[in-house]
Image (cartoon, rainbow, N blue to C red):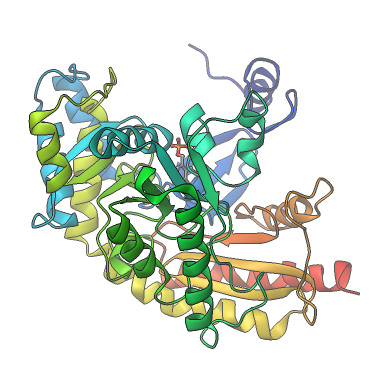
Length: 447
Ligand SMILES: Cc1ncc(COP(=O)(O)O)c(C=O)c1O
């Protein structure tokens, strides 16, 4: 088949592809090639992937170890039904349990991505507890399939709810220290106490003994890397224990080394009963997700049928990619590298708060970072109020793209989440571009 030109690729996409989260018929940049931390368009323009393509390509693009594992597996057996055991699936399940902690965790249910990992965790929580309600945060995203969309807290669930709200999904407000008017490192104890009190009150008003699970992103990602105040996550765990509620951590974005730990919940003094994963497990080379469950939950299903199933559960090619990716994280101590790079990224972002009128707060853990962009630092007036229809943020993202710095932002945040294999030299080459754009934002929007 003759290769298409960039223009042809873009035109076919424009005419025939349903584009997520957009009105249809718009243009998408045709990408010809991706390698390491870079992408190239058909005109030869090079872009640094400073968001790991939706915080997914943790190990960068075209990593030979993953590509070779997929190729090798493809020559042996591309697909095997979930009813049968296959070497990649068996291996990957054990690897994930070993990394999570085999003293507490036992099994993995494999899915195709993030949304269905959350949906299946919710189903399991209901089966195990016999309770119906699922608590989740307003400031969160858990996927766009029906159930995951109801569990999500941000505006992306509105269209789903327009068809009628799903019963038994309850949202609560999770802390966002900067936007709530508090100072990190000063007010943590006060904020933790306040938000845990509100959550417990809400649980009591909803009848805590009918709450199956509290589902939370270990660290809220797409809504702006919202780091919880000290002690908050441990406090949620304590509330779960008090009322017999299961705690589910969503590691879809924050997992696999992103925060400098293999799983982001490992930054806290707690163990979730289940945690969900996707993205970084294969870095998107082949879609894969799943749920890691505790021994206690696993034990429940030795006597009860697990009423969950997907044709592609434990897909052979995907699990082969997963084995290669997880081996790479461990063999190359990617977490140690991430901690080292945090030492470059975090001080730089903090210096942007000092330097720029438009930067209200910088949050960074590992290579998971975001800047809150403001109009007025003194009043903390956000550049883009929540769910604003005429936000200037896309224009700011376009300025970054013009400089070859490709990332995404939601609401009033710029997310900076490069592939975890980025080097200090590459960071030092890219970050000044962000500084230049922030100067332009100061001059253009901050009077
Ligand atoms: C925290 C979190 N959970 C779930 C999802 C949904 O994952 P998927 O798009 O693979 O369904 C996402 C996607 O960005 C996410 O960030």
